[in-house]
Image (cartoon, rainbow, N blue to C red):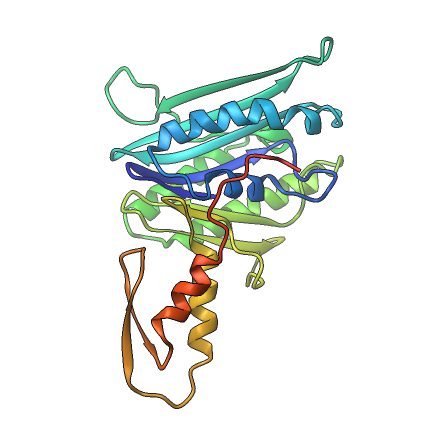
Length: 274
């Protein structure tokens, strides 16, 4: 999930629980938590940690390896940071425990330098099979930073790594398909869907959740796209201001209709993981 707040932005990823018994994916749950909420990035993650220790345990207890980790790669106040939220279940008592931590990836000389983060069964596999995959990846990232390759080339390489892990692990915990998401210091970011190592187009309902200062960006985008596709013969544009600070020229579409549909979207957070 992509998250933007008043002081930062980043990508939240996770490993552990892939889906609840009722079919809810953790990414949907994260979107619901941050929907309608504003504030600072780190405070939002601290709130998420408090919610996680309440909502995750009843789902994790049904898993053979009861644990879930959320990793947030972010830029906060212009500084690269990594946050982790780890929820575990004690195998003896069944009691839950959550740990929230923050790492400054680059900063003062005393700050730890962490270029990569691994999680889940795939992370354990890669850590145990250090055949130079990390050096090759970082070499490609450096080439991107110097403008020699584009972001999709790095995404393609990550998809290859995921597929290789899928082929090597026989327990089914790492699937062949993946989504690669990235966030750059200048605020730009995107995601790419893969079927194996082949880039695929996302379906209409497959947007990666994106919350910006409490607003559901993909949901708003779908409304605007729907209205634009309804345009036919009108050629006179009407500027339409909106709450996101953009001005849209929509031909023949009343501004009131745009606002009506946006106002009908859910705007209240829901912390419950169902």
